[in-house]
Amino acid sequence: YITWQKKRMPQKKKKGKKKKGKSKKGSLPDVAILLKKFMKTYEKHCAQAQSSVSPTIKQGLQKCIEREEPFRRIILTCPEVVSEVSPPAHFKPLLMTIRDERYMLGKELCIWNIPLNNQDIADLSIVLELRGRTVYPFSKLELMDCAIDVWSVERLGKATSFSNLTIIVLDYNEFGDFGVKGLIQGLEENKKLLSLSMCYCDLGPPSGALLGTLISKTAIRFWASKVPILAPDLKYLFFAPNIANSNSLSTKF
Figure 1 (cartoon, one colour):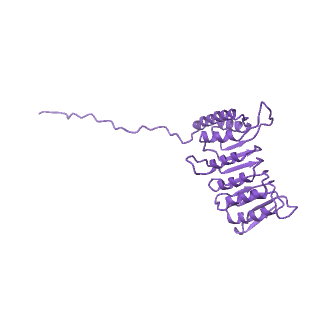
Figure 2 (cartoon, one colour; figure 1 turned 30 degrees about the vertical axis):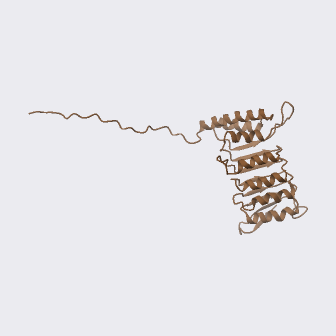
Figure 3 (cartoon, helix red, strand yellow; figure 1 turned 90 degrees about the vertical axis):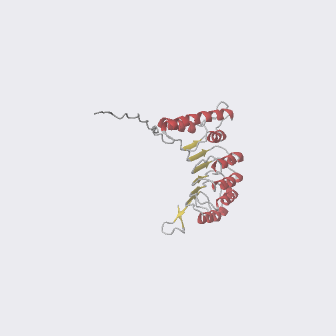
């Protein structure tokens, strides 16, 4: 008898894909690195523009870095004390930083008591408009006490229709009735904006009819203004949809 054992050929190891550790998009360490780079770029642009570093920007970034969370609410304000050594904070360095770093994690952009000229508003409008390769999905914009004029309001209105903005606050900008007229021209076909505030904007009775028509034809559900539009003694006027009848408007004082 002859016994034999079949020689087994060595099997080739199957090449499998190595399992990589899961790295969620925008993971916490990545966010901290991104924000540190954002801060460095912002300080560089401030130095070049002879602008102070906004205390609220610095504090907000530091808190988000410590907590390892995205910088969602971007608030730009001036230092409490302004001098030759510490000049006022400007808007341009912040906007340049957002564009240079392509920072797309911001949801709210708030500018308080920082004068904005026509060029500032034009540059801001380009960032808000969803037309470029990089999309900045800001949903809330606050420009409070920024000395915005009629041209700037009209340009902002045109940009809003091509943006993701659902809330706009323009309080303490005295652009008057002509500014409202320009703003409304850009908002006539807007389907996203839900809230609009224009308190202390030097509005008069002519703005009442314009804003009433705007509210009835757009998706705006809340509008606030401190103007004597309907009566001399009327201090605050709020328009909101009537729950019982969605086609009508109710006033709250």
